[in-house]
Amino acid sequence: MIGYIARDKDRLLYFHYTLPVRDEDNEWWWSDDDALFLRDKCFPEFDNITYDDGPVKVELSIKKV
Image (cartoon, rainbow, N blue to C red):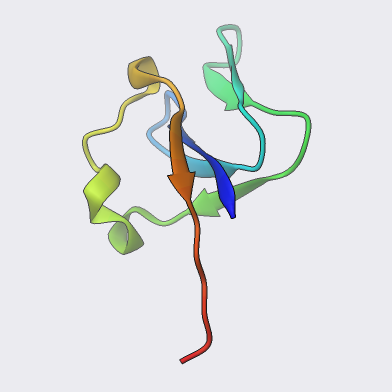
């Protein structure tokens, strides 16, 4: 699944299904559909992403093992 990750000003990381836009009043990234909260411990490769960086296009893959 292709989507975008973005970090809100409070440092929480989210996966958005569509390209989110910055909401300066609330200091978060917003999209028309639901967003999935991502735990930082599970995605250390995104530790350096900040609110100011903006959305990053990614592929999310989950498979049964």
